[in-house]
View 1 (cartoon, helix red, strand yellow):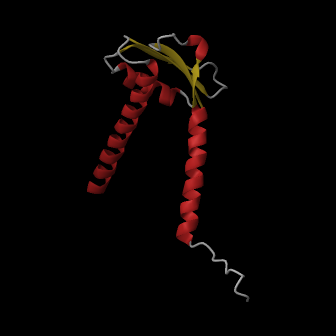
View 2 (spheres, rainbow, N blue to C red; view 1 turned 30 degrees about the vertical axis):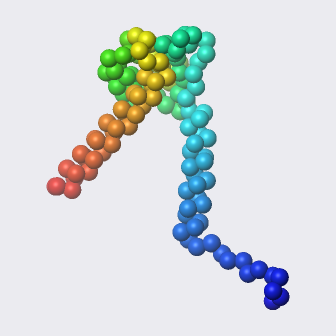
View 3 (cartoon, one colour; view 1 turned 90 degrees about the horizontal axis):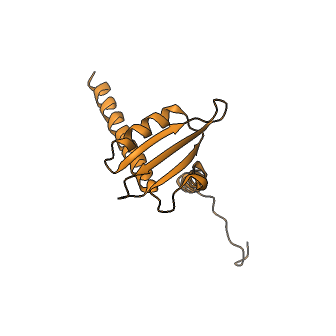
Length: 131
């Protein structure tokens, strides 16, 4: 082997997993960008009311998210609908009193719902371990 030739090293299993994680994160990020769409024809100019469409979701997320968003005292109205049973689309409408935007209310609702699910999972796991 001449000095100009380089020896190629195969990646370790850890490096392969890290590379897979990076590509999975990029794929998940791309999916997340297309997951929620703002419906421009149903959005106010000041941003206090807006309609969103979430793909590949149904009543399971819709009802829980509506409940959590309505718990926010800055939200005047939140409702959801499934346009057609054969389509996996969830339409959600949010109107605020003007202190926050509808987008901020949706973000807070999603974050609060994730926190609630984390607490439920931790409590469930803890109780199972105690049995």
